[in-house]
Length: 342
Ligand code: PMV
Image 1 (tube, rainbow, N blue to C red):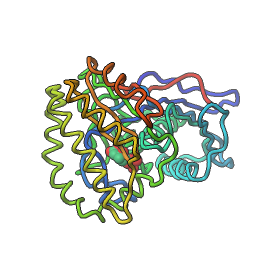
Image 2 (image 1 turned 90 degrees about the vertical axis):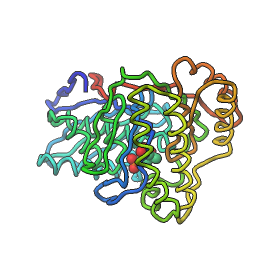
Image 3 (image 1 turned 45 degrees about the vertical axis):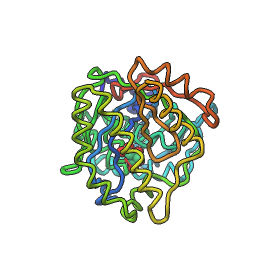
Image 4 (image 1 turned 180 degrees about the vertical axis):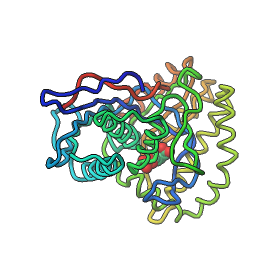
């Protein structure tokens, strides 16, 4: 992580502000061998983004105080976060406090640059930023593996990948932490995100992991994965977009097949999801190489190379049901800031 801007406030208490990007998985984490300890069923590979991010400030409070969690959604000011979010944050603050054996409590302020809990991996960026800001506020100078492991233990496994930039792998065996495969300079891939749903999704990814094994297609997907992981690693290594695209699209569709056939079923797709998928097939028919991937939500990430980005944006803009287009791409990972949110 670049630069260390951890500061002391007027009362001499230490605070830190971290901006952490979201990430988009090319091979997804879906289903856990041990959900309580966030041990995944399978390895995952992602691209860290640069535009979609969370910003989080953490102040270390003296013993006797209690944790405070504020967030800002949209344009208003910071408010006390609702229990559905604050409880997860507080649980992670307690976990980190126990890990470092320190006393006191934390004051947290956090915001996202993009719609929260809508399948755009806001928990990955949010818990990565939170973890790194707590480390900063405690003056802990951990290595990448420790940062990743601590972020993973938040409960959002994908947060373990967001602490690193570029192309990142989270192995399933010895899967405590993620590691960088290549940095962001390796390959300038773009992610044009068609936002078709900005509200909170109905079923969290945590519930998705919980239900994954109930799908009759879960084992089939697991059997496909070793070949797919190898294909994605090779395509990334060789910067071979024609090899990468079909694999990541098939992988995303499979995840949603598993979700739709879980018990109870999870239907993340909206009509506009299909509209975007059809538009991307149309782009390919017209010779523009672009392939989709999706997280646990209705929004569609269209992955392409820089020379195709303008065509992709033009085709998606104005499609029925597309609320917003976010132009994103591979990013360098989290960084600290000097200006606190608190
Ligand atoms: O990290 P979680 O528990 O929010 O799960 C992430 C699930 C997916 O975004 C669908 C896949 C992934 O690997 O990011």
